[in-house]
Amino acid sequence: MKKIYQVALCTVITVYSWSALAATPKETLNIAFPAGATGFDPAKVSDSYSLDVVSNIYDPLVTYDYLARPAKLIPNTIESMPVITNGGKTYTFKIKPGIYFASDPAFKGKKRELVAADYVYSFKRLLDKTINSPQSYLVEGQFVGADKLEKEAGTGPLNYDTQIKGVKALDKYTLQINLTHVNYNFSTILAMPSFGAVAREVIEANASNTNAHPVGTGPYELKTWKPGSKIVLEANPSFRKEIFDFKGNPKDPVSMQVAKEMKGKIIPQVKQVNINIINEEQPNWLAFLNDQLDVSQIPQPALKEALVMNPKNPLDVTLAKKYADKGIQLQRLKALEITFYFFNMEDPEVGGYTPRKIALRRAIAMAFPRSETIARIRRGQAVPVEYAIPEGVAGYNPNLKIGVKFNPAKANALLDAAGYKIGKNGYRTQPDGSPLSIQMGSGSAAIDRQWNEYWQQAFDSLKIKLTFKVARWTELSKANREGKLQMWGLAWSADYPDGQNFMQMFYGPNKGDANFSAFNLPQYNKDYEETLKLPNGDARQKLYDKMNRMLAQYQPYIFGDTRVGSTVAHANVHGLKVNPLITYWRFIEIKK
Image (tube, rainbow, N blue to C red; front, top):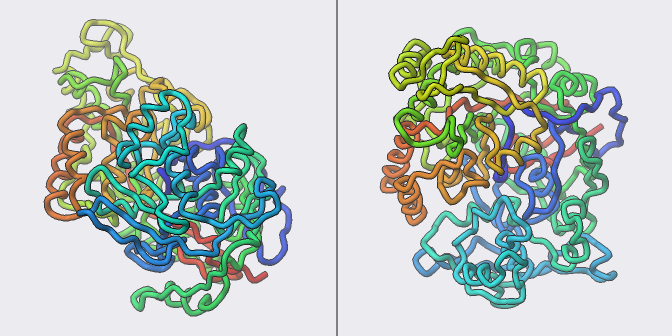
């Protein structure tokens, strides 16, 4: 989920043995990440693992109701939801007095209160070219006067003391945002972890490595970070008093139970969060079964033995009796995500907008057996992506399906017609007779190899030479931002439940950030800009449908699936309700 949340389909980093996990005291939550975090500066990170931690250290202005479905925005550090005026261009927020940052030497022994100016500084950092924020696309061109501020800075740091109309403190506790264009959905963007408030003096005191020294106003503070191995969070003693008072939904027994058992309890009940980096699925699962992890996802290899599936509908499941008898809880959640493989549209072999290049990408998409990978690798616990916006996100249209159907014979005929002939070595060549070879980014874990086998079969069926660039996720991400990958598979999880969050992935100016493929179609860009001016409704939906048809026409992505996750927790975990947009850590209780 989360961030821009860039989550590799199957990429992993370092091995951490489940047998090495030590026993921990009561009030400690033990969980695992499949990959290491890259840092904890809200302006500098975009991977979901880092942002999950960031969201528990820093505070954005707004957040989500823990139990409400569909998602419901609520005030976080503000007294009430913002006042929106000026036809959807001006947002005014009132910060709650008495919210304090965690203690830090930069504060010189004084309590440091959160004020409106902290958000002004934090938002400007996203635009600072010296920071090179991967989240800059979210605010680029949004704030009135920001363009001039950026222009004056050039390639150097922003002058943070220069006031602009776009984001300013009207007084100590009043923040005002003035947008360059109408955007009634801007509040949802502000709920992202990247918009948490940092303290300027802490950032400046730790300028050499702000990623390793997070100090916020949230419920936790960083105690330990061993990159690629472990992250430990401890409850922030300076955290304001918050009481659990979320309401359950009578149609959802789990939410009703959570609301009842947690009502009136102080947030957070969990005093320490131990995050172990366990990159292989089987050790992760064994750690959970051996009570060394409190909450876990059921990994794909264990789905068959952990779940009892209805033969007529693989998504209709119950927990296997041997686990249910131990009191293990099961919660199911269809992710607000799309998985995909993308082509580098600026690459001379797979990119471009000519009919021949489109034919090549379309043929590759038609050769990939998506239904088979859902059945075999996902164990039936996923649904095919047919639209660039997933179900559960505003703008989703179940009636327009742009996913490519599996048809290797038609794919080969398409390549023949486009001039990609089979050479003497048995592989297809470029239409001019030069060699054709495609390289795909990949991780090195067992699950990566499973996906690669299906891709190898797909390319073999087309007589196209395929190689894999095997590397760590961070290395592949860097290579992609530099335009050095031809193909790579990722997942995009909703940062906020609005279609804009997904359609921005294909917007030309977002190249190098959210736009992985560097897709840059003028008509798409124009329509995307028009959607920003429209609220969710018929007019915007027509444009989204039009834009999806463009994606189907030019095939910059091969859409994969949306996973249905199975989260399990031991009987001593109370208050758990898996939320697609926020972590549960602060809302639960561990009784050991």
